[in-house]
Image: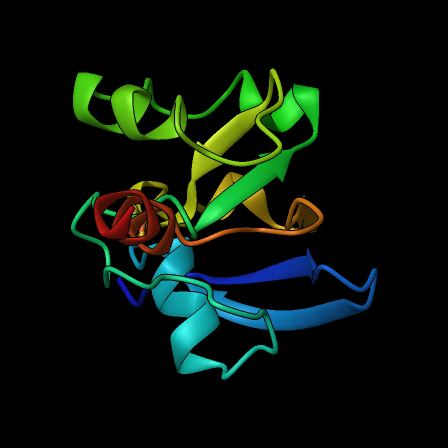
Length: 123
Ligand code: FES
């Protein structure tokens, strides 16, 4: 059967909402890239669990339905700026049909974890 189309709403750092039609099975990182959404610095490590810039905040009712995060995601999430109880890394969350109509939010003032570490190394 053809992959389902899923309507998603993203709210960026500036509070601007962007609505897109995603495809079941792609990651939220790929949605942002494929739809060229204006989210500063998003997905710096291209989904290799090395940055946490793909940090997204979910509504609680959505968060509870997501597949559990792997240890590697939890470790990187711990370093995420503006961490919330319903935070996940967008490169690890796969679009499913039940997500139709959900809103995900980018935390204010995302920092690239690698840039922070490079700054530390230079000291
Ligand atoms: Fe870097 Fe998700 S894109 S951890």
